[in-house]
Length: 139
Image 1 (cartoon, rainbow, N blue to C red):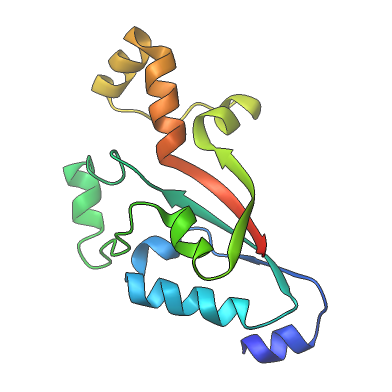
Image 2 (cartoon, rainbow, N blue to C red):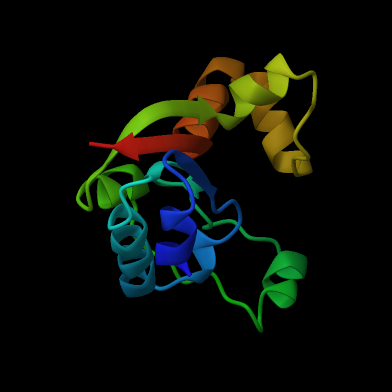
């Protein structure tokens, strides 16, 4: 499929929002390599979570919803992970900054809201370092 799609274009953007987290590290590496193998797949956008806070604080409700589709991707530095497969960060959009830019608030637990009120700069920095969207390009 990738070869067929790649042969039909010279400049493609691939979007895998909401996909990588459900793959194992090995599957994510294979997908990365398969995409990179197609020269016309020039850009790749995905969401990511990284660092200390990533998925450590899933609510019980969310854990129950995910019980049949568990999050499996465990690399703590996904931007570097995919960089090892040839992709370079073209643009990195931090989630809290983007929410402000488009005038949206992210849903937060009461405890996180309190922390955000008490330590806004520190929590913003931590949130932005943890969640975001990246556009890779071929290196």
